[in-house]
Image (cartoon, rainbow, N blue to C red; front, side, top):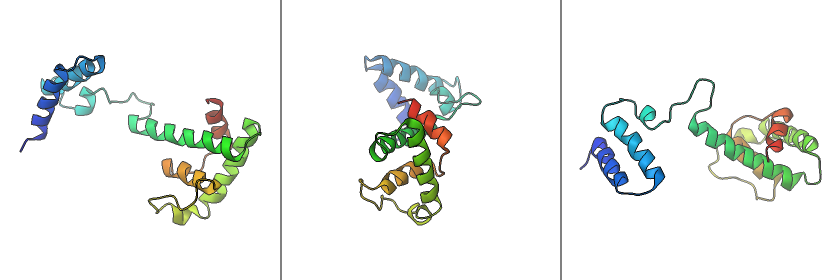
Length: 144
């Protein structure tokens, strides 16, 4: 049975045999850790985040939330200006967060049909567990 360190060594050896730029970059990062240049795996893999920036996991969560917000605005509030869409979506999020979301948040799967606005609200709130202000939603919609 191999140890996690053995797996890292195998990964480095495998990456050395792959002739792709991304593999070269990953091999350098893995070798930083294996050579003892750093004892911090996240630092070796360049996953450390500068002060004031979001962690890489949060960035992907925010991206999923933002996509869900844009899709909800287009699907459920078509033909409205972005400001109106943001105001309507923020109000719907507030209402849902203070009512059905209290029990829906425990569910692993969305309890609503995709054609239901509550399905979109459930998806948004499962990404980040709080309703957003209309001002923030306007900024998200502006970056389509």
